[in-house]
Image 1: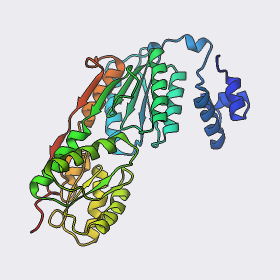
Image 2 (image 1 turned 120 degrees about the vertical axis):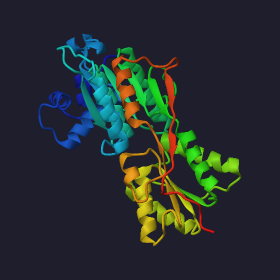
Image 3 (image 1 turned 180 degrees about the vertical axis):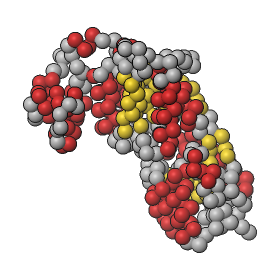
Image 4 (image 1 turned 90 degrees about the horizontal axis):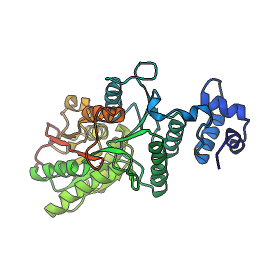
Length: 348
């Protein structure tokens, strides 16, 4: 049964005119009302019917780029590179470039699904999802369903820095090898002689967090070294700062801390310096991603370099069809260990 605009209005408890205003964005609507309408659109999987539905996705000028946080350089670098690639040789119905729209989900799974529904409604030419995904079976199933519908309509779907969605064979995926990168990082610390290593991890429900932790733990297990304390938090500086206090409370004799990413590592370094601890003399610190500021930190951060710009370019080209995905649709993108001044041998 086809879902109508009136059905959405009834679910959201507003008038059809209000639904139209929200979806077209051509009239001010209270934020609470807007959220209610978008939630109804998502729950009912509403897609515009009528003349617009006859337009094939390949003729659309719209490309959606979904990120968790555009203010995070990890996402900003990839999104900027993807937008450049989308504009390389793309042409829209009027002969101009495609319109790349960055959709900032704020890490909200509901918002991610809503954006996918709205991009389906707009017959987007392509959709790029960037960064790790939420490890929730219900959300993964819902995401796979959304991506399948997009693909059925002719929309190219690309995952960048994100593992394939279980049950979905329609997307081309550029998956960062977070496990191996994290394993090499911890092996580096073990090779320096560290045996008491804390971990300032990212959110526990994210694929990136799990994969990096698995690599860290694999290195410890292979070396026969007991796992140190782990504290989960956001992928930001404040989380690293807060985690450091807990890590040291749980093991005051830590000689190294591995951070979820470079931004978290900055918070770890700040907290250690406040306590009068030298980096790396007293405690070594390592990050992940090799964001632009990492080389300018004091001391410069040891980290794992991910080719964020290159991955963004590839994602944009895959989205535009100017490059073809590898056989099977999944490509593993390796990281590179970069050793700098923030890690050294433990004292004594």
